[in-house]
Image 1 (cartoon, protein in one colour):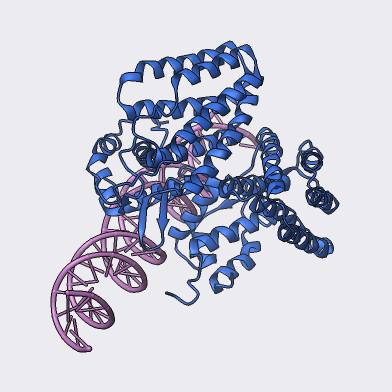
Image 2: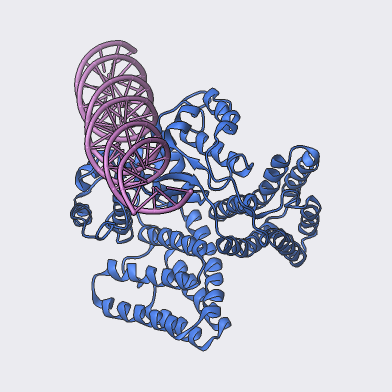
Length: 237
Length: 237
DNA sequence: GTATAAAGGATTGCATGCAATTTCGCCACA
DNA sequence: TGTGGCGAAATTGCATGCAATCCTTTATAC
């Protein structure tokens, strides 16, 4: 039995790092992700990079064209709308389940997360975006279904990616206020209200975002990745 | 431009072959899947086998324990119940969308599939099981949402795997008759009826299956894989 | 006879090398 | 100036090799 067991392995760390970089808009949609450059940065061989990219491709965050390398995915408006529509419906399922599981402990976790969001409100934009996404993921975790959790994670990440393509820079993509209202409805056990709030919350995000187009810098610039890579190289999860 | 372009690559073919083998109960839950043996059988190196196994692991069909190799997944009863519960709710979404898209063309596709199921009714059991799963997947395809399709595929496959662990040998896992009724309700545009039928259909499958336990031969016996491997080696999709 | 320990074999983790494909720069030519 | 093609460089696809890990068997002690 190992002391710490290191829990995750390098492939996991690398995919997590890349995922974070994408969600925090350091890697923008369309950017190429060549295996050797990444390998060099992360201090591993192409083998592990390949695995990570394939994993992210399975999640829909990167596109993997045969013989042409990987690039951060660039969902079309149509795909984006599909994604957001499905998201509202899937998160409906989350609400139902969380209501069934509601307990003081769960309420506590939700409020703790909200507190983090409030605290980070004036911090950097990428971080508050990440926290907003994680609110939805926390809810899904509290729903108690591992499969549902995976789907919410994936959809959440892809929506985050989508927003980095289409959303205006300064829309607060996920209002903290709205999160608070949802928690209150859940606390009261008012499923209908929670659902309506969630739906309103999500369609608000989508509508604000999905009708403006924004052209993205399509090419290669990996230097911004450095802080993410360093963490992996040093094993500082 | 290549003549046929071979469309998919070897990794895809191998994962498809393995997936089919699992769904047709040639590879039973718990069976070990060593990289070398598989590579030898499929006529490729461990690299491609590894990729395929990782892909299937992401779908939940195989378990991938670190340093201990891959094995066909063996979902617990609890996971199984979670899966089936989610399935009914996800397929609810499918029904709504298919109803919205309903057209003679779609109806035709559904009936064509039903005809195949009827035709294969007295053929081998694995084939009718596969067709039954594919009915649900066809529905999801007709729903028009790529993401939803992926989730239904994945859940369908995993349910198929689950049934190979828990279901009695001779339960007709997905009644053809029930599929027919669902198509009829869809044709009439009766969303409520279609939903109820689908729900009934799925809970029937689950209830019949999920309370009996069946012990599976846990070890290694890959010879039965031969026909699947041959197809890949020959490029006969 | 049971239990513990060590050696040997089998299997995975990862890096590297070579062939195949694509991309890009360069030059000729209209 | 713009366009087509050719060759070199960059990049991916895949196989293989070596080290690390795990499993099994055998040997030894109690």
